[in-house]
Structure formats: structure tokens, C-alpha cells
Image 1 (spheres, helix red, strand yellow):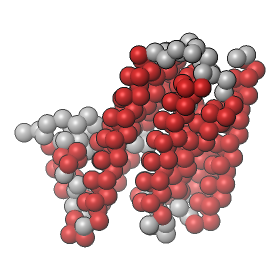
Image 2 (cartoon, one colour):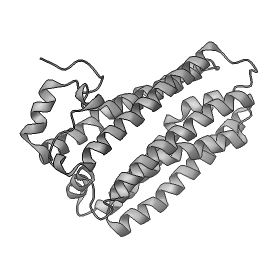
Image 3 (cartoon, one colour):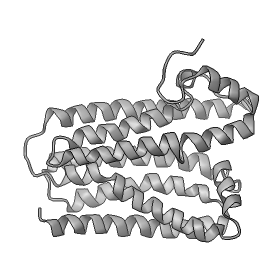
Length: 264
């Protein structure tokens, strides 16, 4: 595949993701809820997967594996978020409400560019998908099978963590309490851990292709975002605001990220 064709695939993905985020911003502006960006950030990865499945010239079986993982993983997470967010569409999530307050009086304009950067991040993080989908080698590597196995583990773990949290919140008697059951007994953010593990699986899969080492960018960026930017810091700040001392006690006794035995 020549450089021009690769750039064309990247351009298709960029136009699609940023275009979708433009429409999502219009919706978010109308309903005054920027939290819907999370839904479509997840759904944008299946969009990229479909583009690569249709237009990338790589070995078909490899494309089916990588694009299938991307499509299924993105649809699962996006639908989980959609179910959660749409139930409370008239109530903006605390971390976005905080951003809105900090960005006033130009909050909507800043949210537009924030949404566009989410679309750009979709394409940047898709580096493993591009690398794998343009590989024409007709033989699959043990690294690719290992990537698929790790992906199965990670998507299952994330789905279990999400389900456990959703079930906890469904119980009215748990209102105002901290979820510390199941995987949440061992980690404050098992869903984030398995999400990162999923991106690691894409990296391992891409290592079987030329320049696959460049795919390390994706799990590295995801880990940085989860640990330092929009993931754990924002989530924990909101949890402390809403649950106070109960959450601080939970912080003191559990692992922040990797599921580990409870602290004594």
C-alpha cells in the first residue's frame, strides 16, 4: 500500500470522526449536556473499523480480526454509556458540569473544540488498527492470536465491572453509598483497568505487522489519560464531592487501578 492510500484512509477516518463530533456538539448544545460526547467517542472507533474493513488492502482474515475487535469493543462500551447517560439526559455529569463552570462565559465554544479534539484523538488512538489493517502478509502471527486472547479477557472483564456497578446503582438502598462489591472490592476503577488492557491487546496484535512498535502510542496515551487527565482524577474528584468521607475511606483501602487484594 502506498503512502497516498494510507493518508487517504486516515483522512476518511478524520472526516468521519470530526464530522460526527460536530453533530454531537450541536445536540449537546441544545440539551445542555456535554456528557453525550463519551457515547460517540466510543462509537467512533467502530466507524474507523468499518472504514478499514471496507477500504484497507490488508490480508482479509487479519482485517476481520482487528476490525471485528474494534467494532464489537466500541459498540459494547458506547451502548453501555448510552444506556447510562440517556437515563439522565436532563442532568449533566458532574465532571462536565465542572468544566462548564470553569469555561464560562465561553463554555459552548470551548466544548465545540473539545468535541473536535475527541474526534482527532479517535484517529490518533487508532494507530494499531491502521498498522494491522494494511498488512498484506497472508500468515497470522502468534502475537496476533495473543492479542485476540487478551482482548477477550479485557472486554469480558470490563463488561463484568460495568454490570456490577450498574446493578449496585439499581438498588435504591445503595443511594449515596460506594460500590465496593465484586471487582470494585479490589480496585476503585476496574472498568478503566480493563479498558487499558483492551488497548494493550491492540498493541500486541499490531506488533506482528511492519512498524507495529508505533502502536505503543495508543495504550500509553490511554494510560496517561486515565491516570492523569479525564479518567480517574475527574471521576474521583466527583466521587469525593458526592460521597464525601465514605469515598475517602474507600480510597484508603483499595487499589486505584489494578485489581489487587484489599489493603489492611
